Length: 243
Image (cartoon, rainbow, N blue to C red; front, side, top):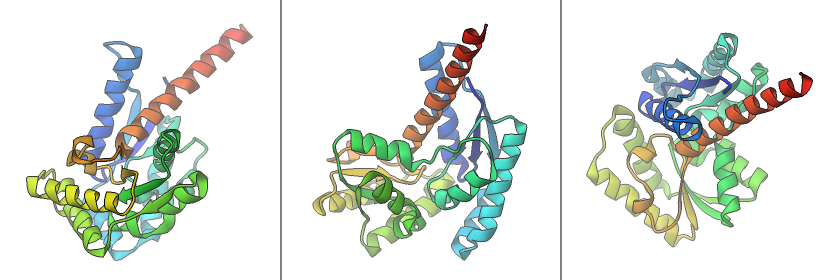
């Protein structure tokens, strides 16, 4: 198994879920005592959050590139950015390293397309819902029609992420609020809903939606395992052929 580099801490609540999912996946695929080979660079999210809301994406890009280079130098064979929002600078991170970066939108979109769905609702931070770096990728690369909540609902979704979920608070009233937002997306024609923030899966799941839910955290972790194991298998096969 190749080494997975995790750019995390944004927040550590979701990074802990990545670690759990990667290790549970490794155990399921490789045996009861198996665990994932991974390296974690964990940011102080308090610093990241201030820069996000200040709109200092240039400084955030510098920090992300630095983290990616450090993980590559430490031996990572592939990279994950363990947050949807920070994929705003995914192309810059990929350009700065030689190892592949698995974009969080790709395994999600691939699963949606495979299910024969085309119109999807997107939940996430205001940055993810309102800017084009994420929606544009889903549309341009995969032909998906992406709809987002209205302004009031976007503010609710964003507030709950930053005031509660990143702080480990799971409130039943917030779950009800998200259920209502999801219902309105479905009324607007969404055939599925993307949980486009890695903390949202801590609050809602398939039982909270009348249409399929696509959890980007779980799909991203599974894609990392696919690539880490496929790369290792390919290397082993090449070595055996050479011998």
